[in-house]
Image (cartoon, rainbow, N blue to C red; front, side, top):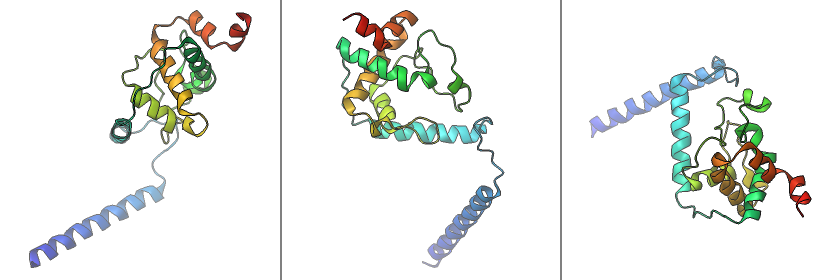
Length: 176
């Protein structure tokens, strides 16, 4: 029993030293948190692992609800154009003024196949801390988020002209 007491003291002392070191590091301000200075490889690896595992665990229970109705895809395209394209780009775009200053750079959704709709839904709804990705679930209902996710699924195969026609609200009025 005396051995367990010593182990407990060693563990507590180790944790205290770690906490003191972390507090000193944070308090020093030595780590540059500016978006124009990249993370160290270790920091980036830890952040990416934390993000990916957190999203994977939380998105597992989401039931896929893709929509294929043209009016819902058009609604998703319009929301994407107004809320997402500045950071995630659109077909025919290679850069944007907002995207240049973001670190880490958000994925170019116009060129990436959507591998997991549950994950995409969760990200759009809840956002990602310290990444400039807002939680659109605060202002959009689930149906609107599924419209965006359903549109994102189709976007990589879309031409710039097709995107503009789909996303442009004036184009829809002209066709009526």
